[in-house]
Image (tube, rainbow, N blue to C red; front, side, top):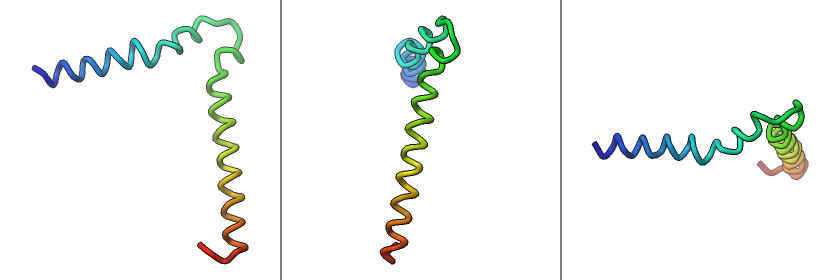
Length: 65
């Protein structure tokens, strides 16, 4: 009984708290405004990817791995 309530509480928390901003974005007009979170996350991913490649090149030139 307690484990069922814990999983139900986790589900309620995710649905009502964590995903609440996405409900607001769902009703916005315009594609760019609705998908700004995706654009930001993809941009951060590209920045980190190119930083990682730069670090790989730096360690390769130094001869350390």
